[in-house]
Amino acid sequence: MTKHKIYTMPFADVYPHYIAKAERKGRTKAEVDEIICWLTGYQQKEMNEHLEKRTDFETFFAEATQMNPSRELIKGVVCGIRVEEVEEPTMREIRYLDKLIDELAKGKKMEKILRS
Image (tube, rainbow, N blue to C red; front, side, top):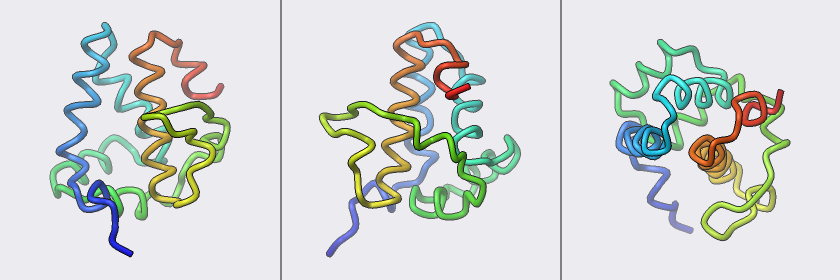
């Protein structure tokens, strides 16, 4: 079985799109970074290193050893797929991130997005 092409895509190639989506709706890069760090457990410096190294999505999530346990509270649909029903672990993490960025762009408060 071949891997989905998103797995081999550098996280740094998609990151600007997350920021652009948020900024179009009046949100900030800092909020996008906060979401990514909350989800993955990376510190800002570690995330920046992955961006500089152009780490692919699969490695980006595989090396995130402190994935937030509250991420399992993320429910809903992204690209017509219910995130809680995605079986492949790496794809589920990617969909969680997509869902969080969607919620940010839709104007949800950070406390709700971060499941506080």
